[in-house]
Image (cartoon, rainbow, N blue to C red):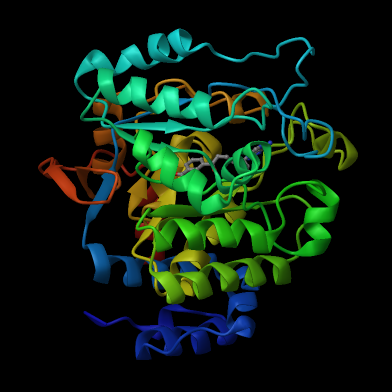
Length: 395
Ligand code: V47
């Protein structure tokens, strides 16, 4: 690995042993994984993850000019995915299902000339099958031919396959013909059976989520992956989850990025049950999750921080904890705002550039395959904010 790392910066002996392995290029095992999630030495963990990230990406932090679109919140798992605040039953107050024209109207924000990616996900709506999404994608590509379509989680793909009585592979092939380019990483939640039973017992099982991504990779469709942390999962569950993602990446190399997602407890049954309303994850755990992802997932190039979920301030700090990619402009976010996120709905290009520069990093706009399109010159960082303050403390 490029450059030297002084292991004496790490105060925790177990983490130092994991650090020795990382520096020697030896893969971390499950016990090391637990250490990443247990160590009290957050700054040591972050410094190690930052070292690994800097060796891959230098000071470059990428973002995409993207727009989130959620065509429907109707979802037949409304009552059983107890962590979700977005879903509605068809006749419930607040339920919506966009017509094609409504999707195209919302997407017209991309006429700004900046947007390069649509991120499209929604509920498991019996009226949103193959024809609906094929029409959505074809219509979007006609209107915005240069905009990449990252759409439909593995759970939605499996839902379409079920209602159309088609094999997964045929659904993926048909959607690709209609304009689908890549799949987002949602729906993974936590793979462990006990956790899935507790928070999403009728949702696509772990092995089926993996099967959809394997099928996509086999067709050359790249995908992302996620882990929803900060609810009922144990640290062992987190390590197991990361291990499953790492194994599929060994097999296919098809994952583009890993995105840890912080659970938001407002307006959902799980938040009430846990007595957690108004209490999101801690900053400590948010930073730990990105750093652990960077170190454990040694076969992933990209780790993304989702500023909508963890706040721009925390995302900025995460840039010194192993992260090389920042969720983009977004434009209008619904899923986490229903669940209590108080962050803005979107960020302007200038805000993103400032956030990255003030962390002492170099902003770069990327395409959806993580190719850098343009780099924005390094500007002097302003006062010690976010990541700069933490990096200074860790040095
Ligand atoms: O799978 C739902 C999560 C995910 C809540 O691939 C919640 O680039 C927190 O996957 N608190 C969908 N999270 C979003 C997603 C995603 C987001 C950004 C980028 C990418 C990408 C993918 O949202 C769901 C679920 O894990 N979610 N409810 C909640 N209350």
